[in-house]
Length: 296
Image 1 (cartoon, rainbow, N blue to C red):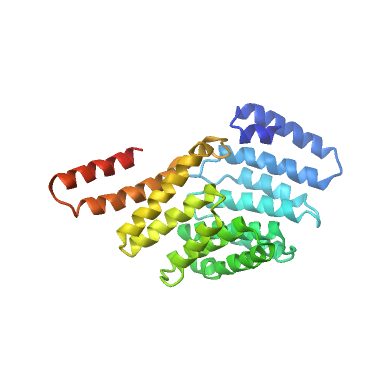
Image 2 (spheres, helix red, strand yellow):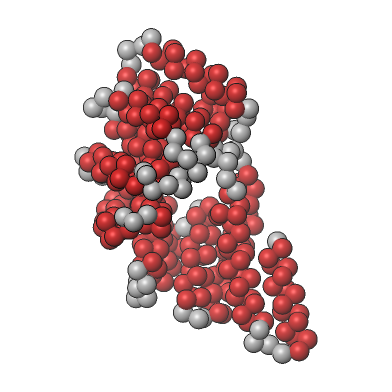
């Protein structure tokens, strides 16, 4: 109940009381998985209170305790806990956790390699790619992991192809396009992003991400017409699912500013570039249209 309360954005004191009761109950059982799960949920509670400007040792200790309760048959729970620990490490402003997060990724990789080639393994590989990609933006360990990070996606894509799972394939192709975007490789990134869009047609919650990515790629190629089309497609997709970004508050973050607003800004930037090439009243009208896009 406590974990459900957190996901629904309910009062934190209610969630804490219920989670502590769960931990006390788990201590009286012999089921190590229950103990690990309840400690992990308590860690999730502390994560909401975690202030990223300081290192919260208590939080990491809670997750470490949860990890210690996992037995050899609890690989999925271990990976869930390790992912939570990695998220907290990535959300801190200090570099104190850099060596710690490398240990987390190494531990996770050793578990992932033993998993069967099924949906869960592909999803975990993709999830860890996303974390390593974020790590590459934040720390001095960019070259250590980012250059080998593509292996996570290639392995995930192979599994997705075996499963013929369109959603997994969309993520794989999309993030492969993202990888080559960062590597500034023009040969692959647009083709991969278009493949991601193709496989995401029934999944608007990820479709707009690749439409946005395609817009960015065309911007980098100074192709404003194609960039405009891609950004506009992204906004059309977002409009159909906009309400989904405001359901639940697992972490107190402005999801709209992180996930949606950049699509509007991309379109606005493209419109502005086009507007500045016009003359007279046509230019003024185009600039007003650009401002309206930003205000939306």
